Length: 248
Image 1: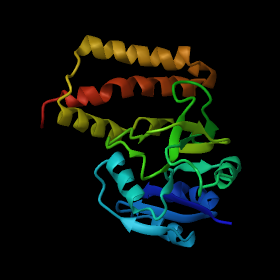
Image 2 (image 1 turned 60 degrees about the vertical axis):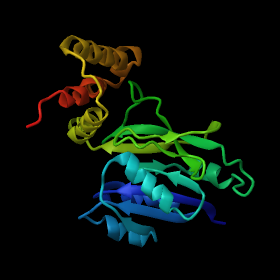
Image 3 (image 1 turned 90 degrees about the horizontal axis):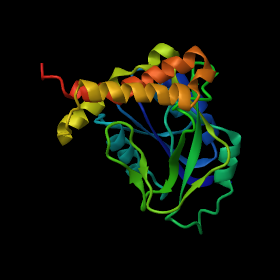
Image 4 (image 1 turned 90 degrees about the vertical axis):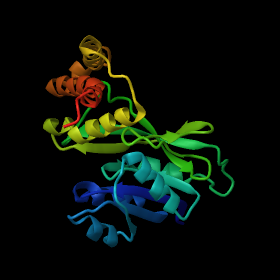
């Protein structure tokens, strides 16, 4: 029996993990992709798995995810990223829900297991990482934030059994992604956010580093834990620093 839920995702040159992402979704009644200009094998792979294909220009993660949710055929939606792979336990838990009678105010979160390359990161500020991804689109949707978007719950949030592997980075160098910080900076400029001074930014960065490496025990992940703590420090200040730079 198929699961009467639309599984939706956004893509851009997502061939690296797309096959692994789509395989656990075979039991869903609809799988839909909203692409923003892929030039690799993304569309070919989507076709092999029978995914519905749409295209739209990209103007931020929140707006793009809102679009694909609006396109879904079913009211119940599972939103996943093109580098997130559901495990069997989570798929089975979703299949066991009675979608005909379920309260539309509810939504469900899924625990993410972060990976860098083949290594799972078990400590630091990335862990734990539960995200709301299963919801009724008539009641819930994503925030409009261009980066670090999230579903805005309007009712109770339940944690699903199992987890999904999150393969965001092929190696430690890829942890430092400039595109996210530029999107954050543009949003800060748009909203007129006050830019802190150097002392404030230094304090933010230092606290983020200590929090991830020491308080969240990132040191137990070895050198990877140090790099991830550094990425937390960068994430805490780079968008703000970029927003404060004069226009070229």
